[in-house]
Image (cartoon, rainbow, N blue to C red; front, top):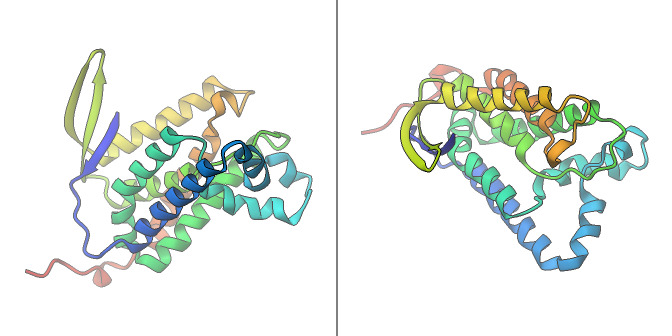
Length: 224
């Protein structure tokens, strides 16, 4: 299932979501412009679990943050930014921009820690915003479970577009991550995807989404 858009208007301009998307795109463009030097850039600023667990340098801890804004290819950043675009605005709207930014960073850090714990000796560079975005998905699930999401469903050679509840779309996404962990047990980095980071981010988003949301009286209605 591929979400296309949700049927959930916001009450305010999601400035942090927009800025996060812009920053991720700009960093990706910069990486592309590096050409053959991009590999060394990735090794310098990506998350490498073994470097963190061995306390190789303070920079290894800093890379938990820098890696959240780097991507491995066009499909990687395209998929991540699509999910952030669809679901991030409503989560920001429900939390407020300041809390949302803190939520996003904390979710990304928790996701990175989950990945490190799952494979502490890995020397494979890890990049991407998917851990933090998984937190956004988790928060959306608990804040807007009944909202409809226009979803593209591949059926063999046929494609079907339909509206589905967010609980089904995001629940299916989370179950897919769990299934991948089970099938790749003993090989956390299989396929180049840090599924434990997705799970850690999503679970943190569920918890933090409930903690960071505005109290109902502070959540304004539409003005007509």
